[in-house]
Image (cartoon, rainbow, N blue to C red; front, side):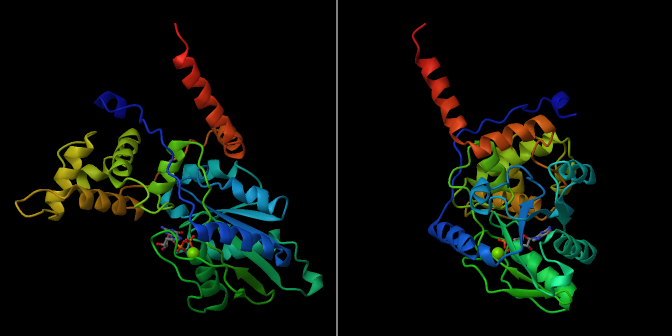
Length: 324
Ligand SMILES: Nc1nc2c(ncn2[C@@H]2O[C@H](COP(=O)(O)OP(=O)(O)O)[C@@H](O)[C@H]2O)c(=O)[nH]1
Ligand SMILES: [Mg+2]
């Protein structure tokens, strides 16, 4: 496996990538203001980062409201990881926006978990919230397609930050009537664990120009090797796996013809190509978070109390400054 091939067994990344533009503050305020009209919160997370895509800001706003946690993009993780995600809580569902059956199941879960009572003859109003790019707008479109056979009502896109305002109510099902609010993706103002912020950026939750594309590519290579995945080796025409991002990007630039005048490889273009291949699921299915029970508890504790991280950092710094 990876260790035998002499690959790195750790990746150092110390500075959290943070992205919290003004429309997110406004989005969070609008979410709060609209909650009183809502029967069920559908909190979307990205299955590839089921822990890192938890936004603890929602906890403060949503509190004890009725909530269904949906791990979307489940087509991009292995089946064993889905089983582990199920243990992360109750009221959990999975979805793949491109799969009709999965959307049908999701609609049933929305009915099951909403506070709506069949006898009350009332419509179900849900609100989809989550970090940017987890697939909120796509899920509403898919539900509307499956439920009513109607076309897109919410704009979607492969880059984060497409939906900037709270939508009007979008009807997705009849009898019982289900309506959903689409909301802008909200990031945490500060992600306490730097590696988690890198994972969120890698899966497309943070704008690429806020993160460093070549570092993301290096982290991706590190993780692919750790998973012992050889898909990239064959796909990119390499002789054997490599742990050297500079070598890989030079190779890729030549392979895709990303060369400046004088034949100089354009490494940034190669890095973007590498990331896109991964994001499209072409380099394999992986869950990037450690989803063992202890780690989940640790991450949740840290996410809820981000000051723990800064306290630990300060403690370490002061220890390293203490004269010996
Ligand atoms: N593979 C995969 N991609 C998805 C899925 N759902 C959404 N996407 C893609 O994720 C990107 C972001 O989707 P969007 O709905 O705009 O996300 P939002 O920012 O949360 O509203 C788009 O490129 C979608 O096509 C899914 O279940 N599987
Ligand atoms: Mg959207």
